[in-house]
Length: 153
Image (cartoon, rainbow, N blue to C red; front, side, top):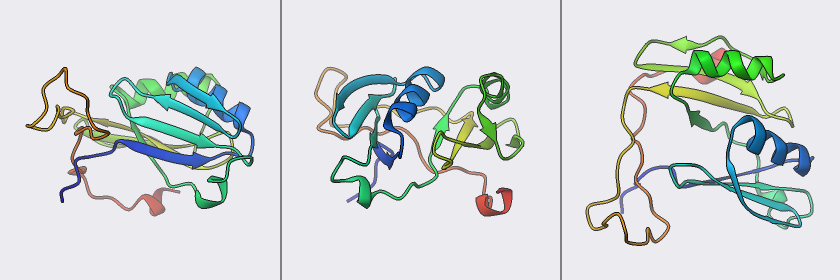
């Protein structure tokens, strides 16, 4: 088995409506499903992001990991999001090929904006562009820059 990349992430939120507005309005994710205790988004890359409210049976299973969301220009994104009220807990770190900044989401959990010059990967070799992905999308490899995120908090 080989890991192909990030295809899905799930987090929990004490205030599901606030989280829905944040991920749709600030981050620009496309809302594709909404039900009691769950909102599901799809990013332009095809990756899924689910937010579980306290009504969901999955709420208790999700402690919030720090996820990195790739942007084209982390400095410009940080400036824009700060003007919209997002709290950043670090300055932009890194260099022109890899840069990141940590911010707080609506429930106080930490997330990260990440910029890289590394291109997104395409579909696995056994898939053409018009074939269903079977839930697997190959997008990126791990970062080249080694860092200790806990020292930045």
